[in-house]
Each structure stands twice: as structure tokens, then as C-alpha cells.
Length: 195
Image (cartoon, rainbow, N blue to C red; front, side, top):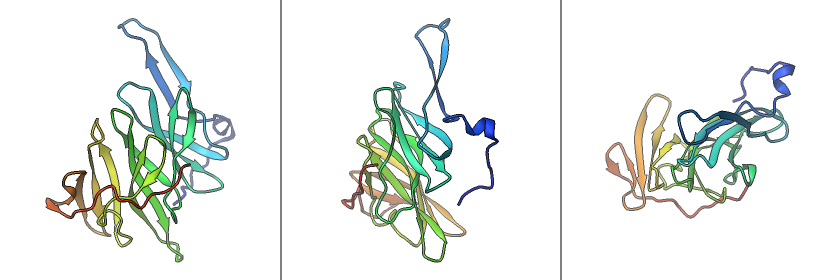
């Protein structure tokens, strides 16, 4: 859902509100601010996570002419949009693993009637979207991946309907664990494309 917020023209000229703050080793080192840039027609761009070594930044961008899109930024590659699942209307990032190998968040789907629901999202280092197991892929409830462990081995988030949310944990050994009970699943094979 788009917000009513519209940036004033002086703010609109900024490529992105997101920036990387970096400091060299040592307490007296100078700090610098670096713009991450923004996709064309972006209204705003938000950084949501950074890898442990600071080399990779992830976030999402709100577009005036299309769906919100998740992105990954590196100094070498710049800002690159992440893939979307078939039928998705874009996505939002919540976190990146410490090693930078996995990005988590949510894909947004809109029904023909205009209602929306979210589905937990996982992107690999190449920016390809993939689906979770059956519980997190349901079209009847919302699911969001909120955080990922440093080595990308465990992902946590929630599933919920209109009035209740239940914590979820996923790993390759146990599959999806919802509210303390296993539901199988995995980083399923229904893949998406690159950005």
C-alpha cells in the first residue's frame, strides 16, 4: 500500500536517503557518508541491513511508477534490484545474514480484488528469490521473515491472520517450526528470477 507521503522537491532530488557510514579502524578515524544511489523513479530508498564486514547493504525502494523492490548494494556492483517470485508485486527487505549470503523479508502479492498479503522472502547472494516451505508460502495468511543468523543457517519471523501472529523459525534440518511445532518444508524449490 502506497503512503500519502510525498517528498518536497528539494528532498526528491536526493538519489537516496540511505547512506553507508564507514569509519577506518581506530577511535580517532574520520567518518564518511556515501550515497547508495536509487533505482529510476524511486520516491525513497531505505537501507535495512548490513553484513558483518560492512561490504553489503540491503533495503528496499518505493517507486512512484511501480511496486516496491528489494535491493542489494556493494561498492563493486552498486545498487542492484533483487528478484521477485512469479505473481509478486514487489518486496521488502528486513535483514541480511552476517556473512552476506542471505537476505530475508517479504514478497507482496495483490489479489484481483485489491487486497494484499505478504509471503516470507529469501534471496541468495546472486539476488534470486526463492520460496519457503508450505506454511510460509500460504496465500491465506501473512508471513514475514524478520531476521537471519550470521551464517544464514536459521531464519525467524512470523505468520499470522487478521488477529493473531505466531513466531516461526526455519532451518535446513528441522524445516519450518511454527509456534513450537514442526511443519516440514524447507527453502523450497519454487524459485524466482533475478532482478
